[in-house]
Image 1 (cartoon, rainbow, N blue to C red):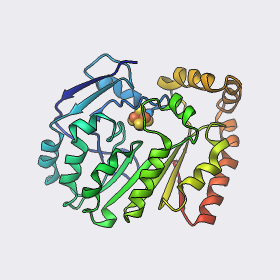
Image 2 (cartoon, protein in one colour):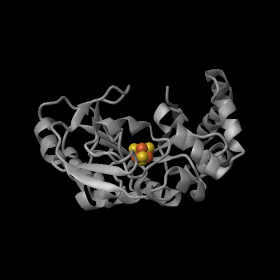
Image 3 (cartoon, rainbow, N blue to C red):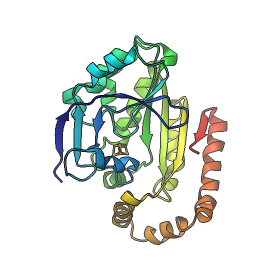
Length: 274
Ligand code: SF4
């Protein structure tokens, strides 16, 4: 599958967030080459200047560091999410290092940064991450699967699960606050491996944030195809679970209880998306 990378400029990079608990969003790229089939950010396609489908293009905001430098003194400090509608460490970051430059500006400010990625490329920036005050930085990895052959279907161009878990450990061992976004929790595909996944991240995280699978318009067809590709028998099960909010709730209640119990036993804080 072909992918394209373009350079663009932006007028604003540190933007006010509408997400509860987050003050700002910082998205160095438009689009994301990881191409996850359940990506919630596919609505961003309408802001792209290129016609490629979501997951197959990336626009690098090459002037982002210069714009951040201008904005930083004018805005009150707060919690910055890096990032909400792109992955700040997708592979063009190797070449552009925009995320690295943004962190290099932020570490000496009053702003607090919460990184969320699916890539071990974040390890490259450990030298900068260590310069933040301990309560001004945290690094999170998205993890929903344990079987890498299934990961290749649902997150085709994201780094392997093992690479993420190894990176999580390395960062946690450096004394940097770490977290896992356990999402989307997918019927069978996540739940069958849930205990294995929780065991793999134990002793490597300060907290986890959990979310259900939210099937939205743009990702519906791709999701159905991906589930069918992994196991055609699951299609019916998913249709039943997601046929109403009641059946979805009934399915997720015991799963979330299992995760809460693990949190209590492991003394790891478990948060759930509202
Ligand atoms: S890594 Fe995040 S932003 Fe990128 S495609 Fe996957 S879900 Fe979307």
